[in-house]
Amino acid sequence: MKKISKSLPPNTLTQFQQINPGTDWSDFRNAEQGNAYKALRSLIINDQGGLCAYCEQTISTRPASSQRVEHFHSKSDTSQPNMNWALDWNNVIAVCLGGSSAIDDDHSRHPTPANLSCDAFKAHLEERGQLSKDIEGNVLNPLELPAFPCLLTFDKSTGELKADHAACGAAHFEGKNAYPSLAELVEQTIRVFNLNCQRLCDERLEVLKHYNQQIARARKLNNENIFEQLATRWFLTPWPSFFTTRRALLGKHAENYLVSTGYNG
Image 1 (cartoon, rainbow, N blue to C red):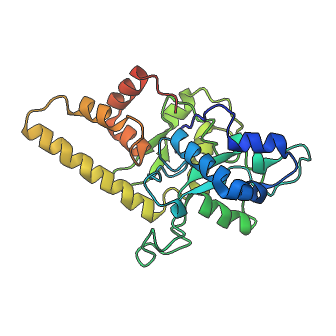
Image 2 (cartoon, rainbow, N blue to C red):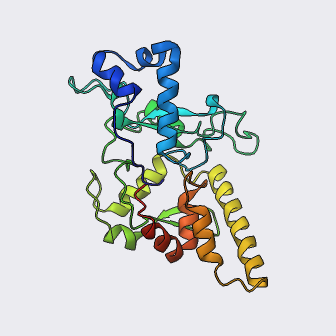
Image 3 (cartoon, one colour):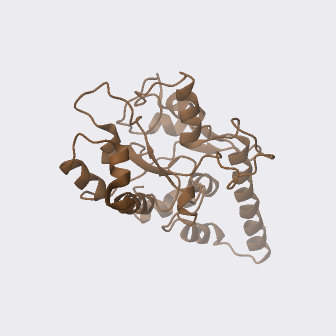
C-alpha cells in the first residue's frame, strides 16, 4: 500500500452528492446511463497513478470489468445519520478484483479464499463478523499514509511485506490508530487486506527476479549508476506495479529520488 493524494473536487460524484444528498451508491452508478460512474472511476485510477490502492498491482491497463471502486468505510454503514459513506469523495478508491476472478487469476494455482486480497478479502472478513464496518483506526487508510518514511519492508526470501518498526517509530502519523504502535497498525493492515497471500508474494518475487537481472547486467557493464537509473525509470507516473516493493529494493536511492521530485503520493 502506498500513499494516495486525491484530486480536488468538483467531480461527477461530488456534483451528484450535492444535488442528491439522500441517495445511495446504486443511484450514482445508474446516473447518466453509468457515464458519471465511469468518469469517476477513471479519475480515481488516474489519481492513484494506475495502481490498486491496496496491493499496488497495475489496474489502469486492465479491462473495465477488472477495475472496481471500493468504499474504504463500508457504504452500508448507517450508524451516523449525517454521514453518507456511499457518496463521500474521500471514501472511494480504486482497486483490483483481489483474486476473486478466475479470468484474472489462476485459482488452480492460487485457490480462494486464501488468495483473496484487497477489498475482496476485507469483505470476506466483514461477512464473517471478523471486521467492523467502522474501520478507521483498525487499518491504515492510504489517504492518511505519510509520504516519508516508507513504513514497509520487503522480505526477499518470501516476497512478504512487513512493518518497518524503525520507520514506524520515526514517522509523523496523524491518522487514527487503535493500537499501541504504528507498526502494529501496519501489520494489521497487511492482515486485513491479505497483502501477503501467496499470489501477491509470487508477483513480488517476480519483481525481485527482474530487479536482480538488471543489477547483474549493469555490473557486467560496469554501470555504477544503475540504482539512480532504476529510480528515475520506476518512479514516474503512472507508477510501476508493486511500487512499495521497488521502493524497498532501491532503499536510499528511491528515497533520494522521491524527495527530489516532491513525491506526496
